[in-house]
Length: 247
Image (tube, rainbow, N blue to C red; front, side, top):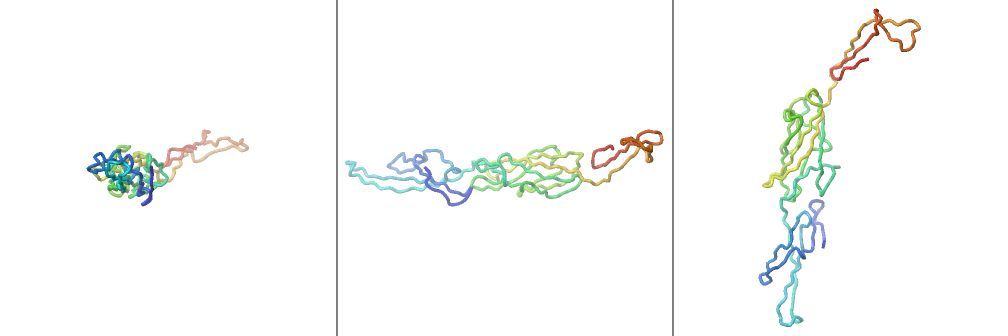
């Protein structure tokens, strides 16, 4: 039975419950309070237990009793994995589900620290222990991803350390790991997508099958312009930044 709440907001909220059934005194003469049921800090952080003491007068109606309240605070254990956090992610019990990040780099250029969307990469310990988090790349495709990118172990910032060309790949998919710096070393993962965008750095080149063409007077609309040998003139436009295009 819930009795009350609130010494804080969000993860710092304290839920208080009636301790009946959760604790017992198996040896009344010793007065030792013991745990009777499994406790979950994430659900209830504090229990109020009513203790009744009575004498043993032969006549039950003549017995005297007194009560007191024992406050039992549940200490948090490291039983929750960390969670990546950003606004708008799908939540389940306060944790982001299947977190994904994205960014882009320009082909052939070195960007340095990357701007990550929807927010910078960040994870938190979901226990009140608040263990520090360290970040690393767990895996990725193509397998050469570590030649081009690295992640700061403490801040989660991603840095491009080498320029990449679209001829190598157009997209990297990297698994980011967030691990608690604790004895349990609990961890969580997220996906990071890095798109390699082509750069328009070369002018187009026009190649024509002939530079002089002929068309008859009163030729119907759609008649092809031909060279001196009567062959239709054909133009080809090439751009090193793009695929080959014909007109």
